[in-house]
Length: 84
Image 1 (cartoon, helix red, strand yellow):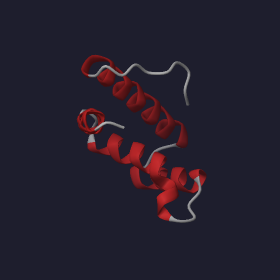
Image 2: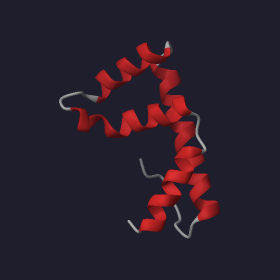
Image 3: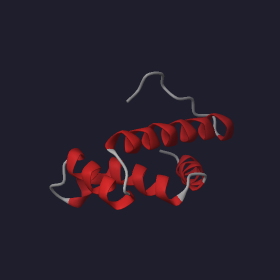
């Protein structure tokens, strides 16, 4: 990843609320915390933010869309369709 793309990603992440940034980071970086599984992380996030798993998933989806939109407006990178 080029250095410009890293800065663009940081800028895109900064457009999200602190809660949304923390949720998205936790969901993508859970493997770095040791033996946590995605469901363990999801349960922990639900407890931290007093919400449901479905709401966490909606926040993740909305945040991903915002980041993709930011990249499409501020970078030459184009998203690959239907990548999850």
